[in-house]
Image (cartoon, rainbow, N blue to C red; front, side, top):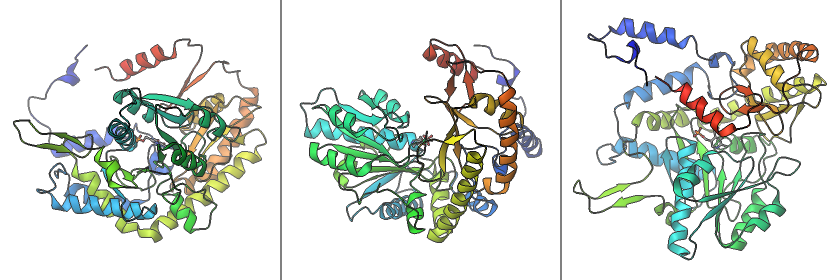
Length: 443
Ligand SMILES: Cc1ncc(COP(=O)(O)O)c(C=O)c1O
């Protein structure tokens, strides 16, 4: 480890002006998300919503939801956000839930609740397994890894949805939970939740729906009469749903939800220690201290936007998605993979190298996520893309023409999730990725 001057405390602190100048300057290197240059990471609903977030977040930035008695305000906000979302997902009177720090924590809690429920109800299971489609988010593997649960990944059908036959035959006496995504991150496709629900009921196992991406889009699209496949608690067999407030909920980062069909399952999410000298310890979620800012901001945003606001944003985003998809297909060289249901999709090509295309677009400032199996570029469309969609399409067309004459990319390229990169000729991908993380976070 090397520590340079950046690692030393200043003898004397900076003035507010100096600090903010330095921070504003640092920000100039960040991706231009307010101008629609990134296709993921940030979900921005405009300046007014931004202002609401800032004020609500600042007001509660010292608040700690660890102690609901000390902060009844945060308890009220959390309970109301959970209740409103549970009813958005048609949870019955028994539905309960919790706010978490993000999709990964919500998924971790869903896996923990299922694991601990199985320990209680099915003590014969010593090696619990969850079955997830190939397209499900890796946060599930991470959760299973942390919790000592085995993950079984199921191949996708030709539409990029979980292959039901393989799924059915993979359920065994150790299976505790199935997962379907609504939609899955890579291709924006919703898994066959209804059929998964039937299987879950038949085999007496849980079904978690990962609606981290779609939770605050699909219900509003349904109200706008877009075709939305069944994904929520109306589907018998669905036992829990995760949904991210910091994605299409348009709230500040650090806010997600896990909602359960009934309270007994949520009890298995909790952690309790009774003999600690510090007192009875009961913790609802993963974190101890629970920052007030994200909870307050989420409450403020959903009450500021209301149904009308979310429907207006959903309509705008879908309109832009359609224009982008039409423009992409018009190039004659690129295609949309599968049948995405909302504003998340992947673009592939059987005629040109999409990674070279991404490099050319990056030269123009567009950060496109790269995927593999098959090679594709990833889009999450948000309101700022409305203003740039025509410019983007014309630069895409220009780049498509240049790729035809451009260099051949390597055949064994692997794409890096959330890192906007591709790499060639690496046989040991795990070591490569570990080295990448070591290097990225060096001091
Ligand atoms: C479908 C899905 N689930 C879970 C996650 C993980 O969410 P987070 O990055 O907030 O932990 C993501 C992130 O993109 C996602 O798309």
